[in-house]
Image 1 (cartoon, rainbow, N blue to C red):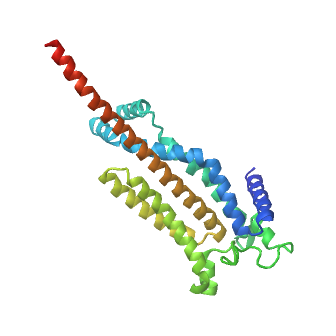
Image 2: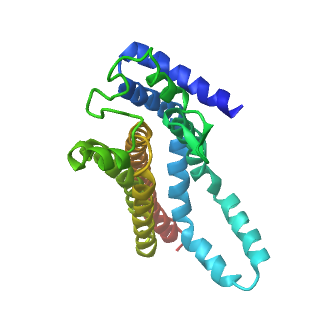
Image 3: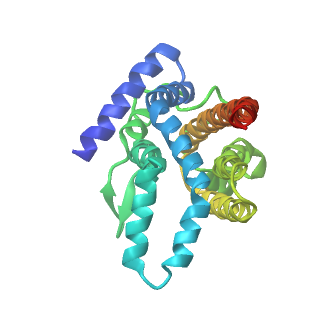
Length: 272
């Protein structure tokens, strides 16, 4: 079933390639289409993270109040989420949905896997196609900027040196930075204590991505970089819209409060 899913994604990618004429651009177009489909969930994710930060002081109060009663703490926390209509899982759903796609892209582009000198798994469908007689010379590139989408930065650096690996390293650095920036954006609406936690989390995740991405095919990094850059733009726009909406609500509440004060004074004078 999983192999069929990977094959289906490859067929979609191949149809896009026939239209745009470049595998790297096909990956970018495919990623944009996926992100457009996930846009409603991404907006919901950003709203959920925003709402979670707003009620965080209340959560902290509950944690202090019921520190010795975990069962009561969980119950009261769920009641708090329900009261404020906050769903903690909403912030995780887009990432959960994207993970199968990221794994599928890796398996599409990865080469043969050897075990005890024997091929344990043949290369992915895109790897097989680009190594078949049907593929033309240089077809597996991204406009020659990335000469080989199947190759990780590690192999290019080891076999061809630093200069040849520069485009791959740029993709890798973008991969790491794309994990750090969302944490900074989230920290903008958090308390000072939470801001520090978000920054540390961002640095940790960026370091992990550098380590993981070093051995990942360049096409997978291209997919993730494109997806993350779109996600960062969506998060920034959504957070800005939420901030403007909150400021407008605060201004309206202030105007209503000022309007009520003279009315109260008049009613007081009449009663006298």
